[in-house]
Amino acid sequence: MGSRSTSQTITEPAREIEICQEADVVVVGGGPGGIGSALSAARSGADTVLVERYGHLGGMSTGGLVTIIPNLSDISGEQQITGICQELVDRLDAKGATDYPKKEDRGSADEKLVQHYIDANLAWFYIRDDLNIGRKRVLYTALIDPEIMKCELNNMMEEAGVNLYLHSWGARPIVEGNTVKGVIIENKSGRQAILAKVVIDSTGDGDLLQPAGAECDTRMVSGLRIANFAFPFWIGNVNMKKLEDFRGSQPKKYDELMQDLKSQGGAAFYIKDLVKCHDGIVWFHPFFPSMNQSDIHEINRIELEGRKKMLLSYDFYRKHVPGFENSYIALSSPQLGTQGGQRVIGEYICTAKDMTSDEVFEDTIAIFPDNDNGEISAKHPNVCIPYRALVPKKTDGLLVACRAFSSEYQFNEYFNLIPHCIAFGQAAGTAAALAVEAGVQPRKVNYITLQKRLINQGVKLPVP
Image (cartoon, rainbow, N blue to C red; front, side, top):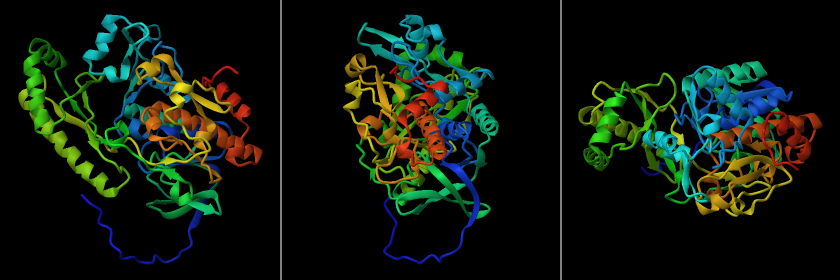
């Protein structure tokens, strides 16, 4: 479906916008980066507002049905991503709303445990080949219940004193010169303005960047994970024993059925849900290639194609695959799975070279396991992220805490997932509060002070 723009224009009448609130920090977008940003800013003493276009928080991790928090450990099993990300897992665990390998099993090469995750079709998230020992090992990855997650996030925001604007779209930044001073929001109450000392773009797509005057890198390469939409859906009431017995006893027949389904355009790969009380639920995460995931016509196209694929797949499984006879479509993604897009040009740009440099930056704000690059990962199991990758090069009053962080597409491909964005958010929110406290622009925040505060929040950083 092509562009429908014309050369015709209209002039929108000028109007006065009511200032509905003034705050220290405004976070736009309540996804993984936004929750990290808002919680850390508010907990650091900043008067904080969080603007979210849907009626729930969590973004891709809840509404996008990407209910997997992967790569929390490196291949040895040593946890690297901690802080708010681990706090979320702990809170969900207390409610029986998550599943993850026990601490003693992280990094394990036990064949039975490895096979457990392979049989659930979760190998991409849990299992890696350790080239150093020639065996497969188990990563620390957590599965979550999205509905409990939404509730816990609300509780955490309330406890921290974050002022929520749900069902509100961050329409555009308020800019004076090269400095962002707030954001215009739009909701059922109309068009309003929120003024702030620091604005954090956690929209995922970097919606505020170009209107704020920030330079962006829009390059994308076909075939990458980030060059795809996802349309996840869940099928419930599946007789898993019957399904697994069929797959085990008649693998050739099962493969033939999946090839048939795939030839019809269906989703021929499911993931077994391991979360407690999710018995009989299987997940589907079909991808749809797209080079421009912020184009409204592309968004509409995938919504339509995604539902067609979902219904076609459901009908096929129910009619032909043992175990699905009494199943039903339990849930379809309220938010499209957007995986990539424009990225800010920051004071530091993360590139593929950073995955082999082992550099510990003086402004490191996170350590990310690199589990997905074969021999490179074997030699360089972790990557440090500098604070400067969250700071636009030419725009003040603005930080970026989402997949639009400053990075080339080769780097973004591996480090823009849910735990990474929560970590970006925790650093950005803490830095924003520090900037307000010191009366300086975010780019002038003292790195050492920022790192000390992050460590006090439970964030793992390199030892000086």
